[in-house]
Image (cartoon, rainbow, N blue to C red; front, side, top):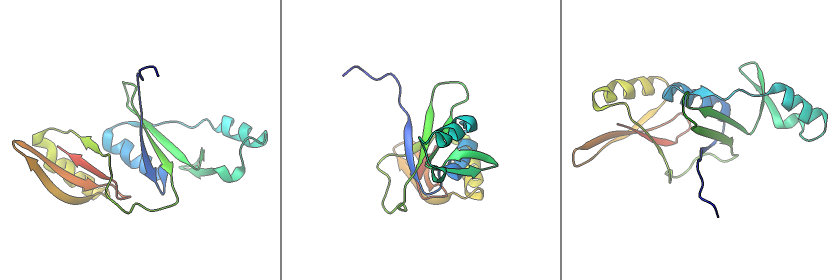
Length: 142
């Protein structure tokens, strides 16, 4: 196997488009645009079903996923639809670094937008706050 040069983080979600919007705002990233013409062509040509699509913020999108991109470097998070709700702790989570002096304000803003504070953490000189996004996925702010 050759060495991979890039990767994306994939997050399971019951509502991927709404969660992608939330994380795009949280990280200052952009929601990846959807090619509506391509989607319509795939349905028309029988490669996809109309039921594979939905409308989000007035745009035709694939029902099963939405992605966000970093504005300047090649980084991507994909939010994919799953039928089950989250029931256990994440095995992987996102750390959002805002700087020690900005943690309290960032946490307050995230809670105002639907995050839930889970606990404060520390290890030696390091401090962070663990929260859950609107769909229960844990992440840390430090």
